Image (cartoon, rainbow, N blue to C red; front, side):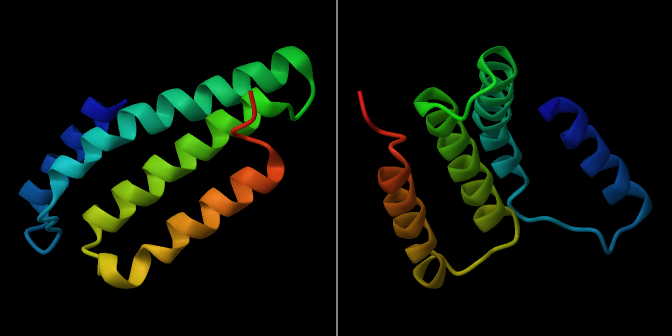
Length: 99
């Protein structure tokens, strides 16, 4: 999936020179995000409940998606980092880190 996205990026960049991403390498961070999100969906379909394992995989998938977005779109990390604190707090409230 990541290779397809990178290929599409380079294809668009060849035909539309305005389409430029400086931090294209951040697309590689999407691999664990996709794996984690797909695992969350698989566990949910298997158990039909929003259990701790689903919440944990969902949290980490969203974490990596937001991290990738911050690099891809050159977001100022000094303004963006509180989102990660909020996500961590929500994950603790929802019990995503319980054993």
